[in-house]
Image (cartoon, rainbow, N blue to C red):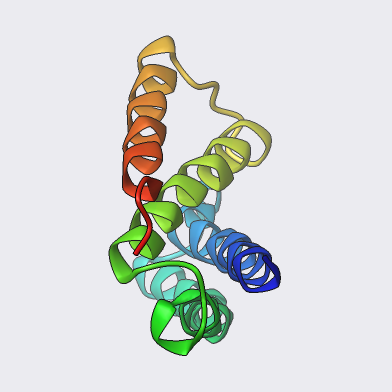
Length: 118
């Protein structure tokens, strides 16, 4: 249980950095494309420093509870939650009903992926 929780918390933290790296520049209209790319790269570096341990801790080959496909699907679901929060609070863009339905379909896929571990 510790490895699952640690992996999930690391994935949440890494996704917070990556979502910021991918979308924060949209609020910075004065930045040139080069500045946006460079700042995004700098923000993305900590993401990798968290993502790699998240996968190592969580993967079955190192004693974790998740297979690689399960880690990937879990990461995508976490990405959507982090993105939804970022979109509403940072970008000030509300989610449309169709966005919420699409997210729910991804979460249904996560449920299927988590069935029958190992």
